Amino acid sequence: GDSVTQMEGPVTLSEEAFLTINCTYTATGYPSLFWYVQYPGEGLQLLLKATKADDKGSNKGFEATYRKETTSFHLEKGSVQVSDSAVYFCALSETSYDKVIFGPGTSLSVIP
Amino acid sequence: KAGVTQTPRYLIKTRGQQVTLSCSPISGHRSVSWYQQTPGQGLQFLFEYFSETQRNKGNFPGRFSGRQFSNSRSEMNVSTLELGDSALYLCASSLTGNDEKLFFGSGTQLSVL
Image 1 (cartoon, each protein chain N blue to C red):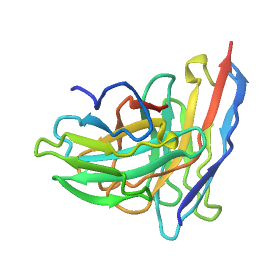
Image 2 (image 1 turned 180 degrees about the vertical axis):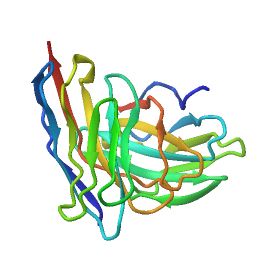
Image 3 (image 1 turned 135 degrees about the horizontal axis):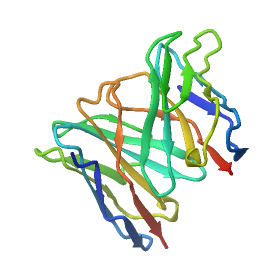
């Protein structure tokens, strides 16, 4: 079945450091790929998405490119801030009806 | 526009009891889906409803059920609670449920003692 693998962390970075969170997926077809973020005490929020190969999703300085050849969707940000501290979930959706498969989440802490 | 509202925010139950959780989607959204979040299993899809019909279901036992009302509000029920049902239950809504952005509520934290 479909699955998502991502580095679990926790990841601790200093402010203004470069961030990469690796994500790879297994799917039978051509899924849409997502990054969701969960801030402390809040529900998940969509951070960015890509629907086809070579698409780049971007939002709030975060970027991820849909790489079909490597089945990857790595999240990057050039300069993290303390306010980026959260749990990041890589996810895919291959079928309709909102069945989204989530990775285990990566906890990020950014220290001043 | 109000977001997805889940009630109650916290629940404490004992084994064998049953529980009902409520979710009000964003106005105009007709699809509501439910997820269970635990430290060990992460986020797992429970089911999705659209226009009062369950269209998709995850791999959970029959003790987990749900329904959707004509105003798109949804309820989730868990009967004969087990310790392992302790989790954060998240509700998400979208316009049609077809590969769109999901809007999540803050969740209901269920503790089974």
